[in-house]
Image (cartoon, one colour):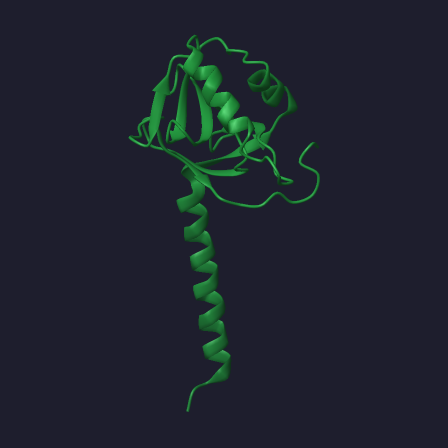
Length: 156
């Protein structure tokens, strides 16, 4: 016969351990933070100094554009570097800007924050969430759009 008190104590103890380990494993992850000025910068084709620009997706249908501060290195084969001085850059912004056409989810600007809250760069997309992972060397090893729906007023 199973002792119920011992069983529940074991379950609670295992839950606490899992929560503690999951907190440790998330320590290298950052997030996106909504920012109206970043939206306006992309929509007016403003190039931020000391940023390298990339797009995610195909050239004909980019899902996101990111500007990474020069002191950080983006380690990913899924992002394509783009010259922000080129007409291609403007075309990519226009393509991302039409992503939300006919829906309630329009592209928006975000600050890419590292795990400690440091500003790593900027993001422009109709995709509102991304996996942002930094390795021990401070390199961005994962910057992946996560498809989600907008909740509430995206303009706040």
